[in-house]
Length: 515
Ligand code: CA
Image 1 (cartoon, rainbow, N blue to C red):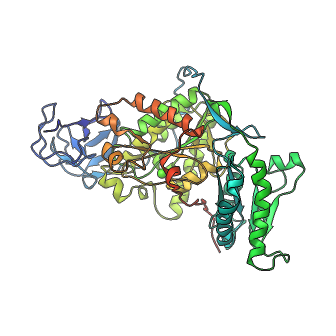
Image 2: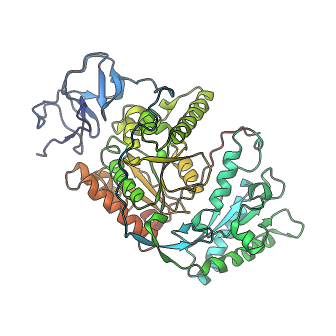
Image 3: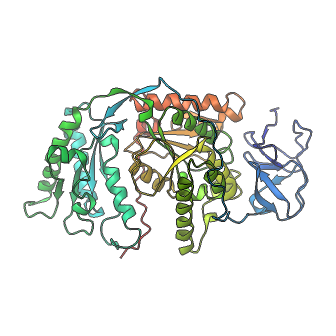
């Protein structure tokens, strides 16, 4: 018979979660002497004391809800038994109140990366073909297949060719409030360090998002250095007679950029050149117990090494806003965070929803009762370092340290915005399981549970479930992740998503109307 394992996160908690695969049956005697009065599924909460109606149910040291009826000690506490707390208001927050001693620097760690003319460092060497509008996607896809089949082998130092396809560009209110977000996102994705500054654009010709609006003069530093204009293939040009002339034009243009990309070489660079985006998806109650704390430990290591780390997912940190503003290095950083949260509150209110629209049926099945509980588990990805900056959606990151990059929690939109920020390494934790991947940047996936890591052994790169199993510590798995990042960044190792070429579509965040 297996030993019953329950996990409590904070000394104040009056619930714990059941760690055992398959859950625990009614009548199970827990090590602390409590007997389960009901069956409790894996990842779900058990009441450690009698919880009278209205009592606060405490996890991570904060109320995640209020009991709707009496819940006896030893029984399953699920989402139907809890009233969710209201969102924390955005005034009277603690502002930069936590000023910890600086973390000791972590020196001597390096990786092999591609140094770019603008000083940034790529972890892959990829030709990106930017598109101004969805209309050209089929043509670009056709050209990409031809380039892969006929050209790529002639450029052995180039890893891949990727069409930057999206649904924006026409049929949109391009001057509306918020329209600058998808446009700058697309611009900054084209400038991601993994693409070496080699920008080429395929345009239809009649679209709202004209190439000069997407890439205004001065947007591409390397072009200015070389005195070159933006490289555009326009499908509606009179010169194109027949489909094949469009494809030939794209392939000829691609050749020029492939030749230059092929001259790139990896060189040893300090770990401070990593720009890491962390996010979670398909979360369960273990996310905040195993994988996210391990990522948080790794986040601290990265900050100590002088790297940039972004955490995001506004609806998943909204309920911890007081923790975040307290950790801001300056009042300005805290104010910027509050501004982003307020903007998002208003954005959700326009659709007459709030942050509680976030949790999924899978989250609940995995033991997460509501967004408050999910947020407390999500926020730990940010570790304990001070928060030194805030980035608005679609903007490019220009500073080191721990940054709050404001993005929706949607996996694809968050990843797309972190890509625009200049991410060269992506870390993704999952409990329910998702085969998520991006064509543009390596994605390291961390499983929260051993059962998922076992079943998805060729999709998950790291098993943080070993923490719940008592085999490894949070620090062990955090260090393992840090080492794997350096190996993957150097091209010495591939992630499973890269191995199988699993790529999700880019999804631009467009809060503006379409026409
Ligand atoms: Ca997410």
